[in-house]
Image 1 (cartoon, rainbow, N blue to C red):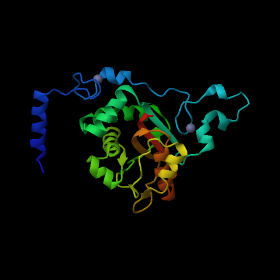
Image 2: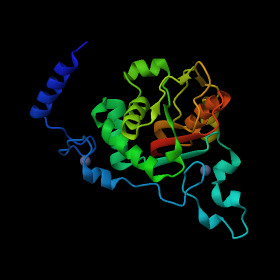
Image 3: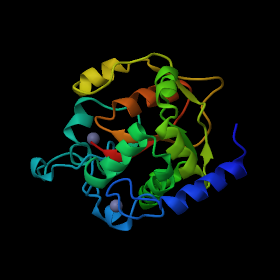
Image 4: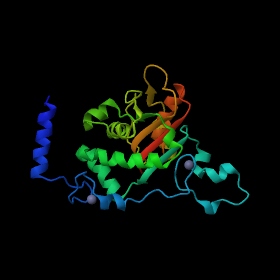
Length: 246
Ligand SMILES: [Zn+2]
Ligand SMILES: [Zn+2]
């Protein structure tokens, strides 16, 4: 165990010799993600599916469509999700993708505060998600967590909780089954792959809206599986927020 002050001194010396660089473009960046890379991130533009947050194709909607058809995307109508609402800051491409890859696969945890700031913006912008009281990161299976050394969703949720003054429950959901990677699976296969893979530990879910946090969402299968576990534990309102939408 390294003394915290010694570690800070060490980090300070490293910063003097090697000034912090942007994890995406490698230019100088005190926050490890530079302003021009942040500005280059393509946001997920409205109109969005009321539930999953994917862009809605308004051309497929006629004036006679019901509210449900106008508010929900085709996927949410065909394969309903257990969470009430999901949003993401930007598309999983360019600088945002580079930053997430640097975090997950090169251990660049120094970029966490800058990425959590993006989550905070997305949270503040959405009047529904803003009601969330408790942040819950999507857990990794203990084996995967050991391999990586950390859970990026937990680090993001921890920083977001500190920045936004919300409660944090990292221990609430556990991943009980090791599952194969979701890459190459379609929406239904992803959902099947994660069936009953998460469980709520201990007592009932906390009162008030819960916000699940993850780095990337694709079809929403992971958020759905976590929401099923929360719902079974008595959670009434479940939201989800990811940095990026793939
Ligand atoms: Zn940059
Ligand atoms: Zn949808």
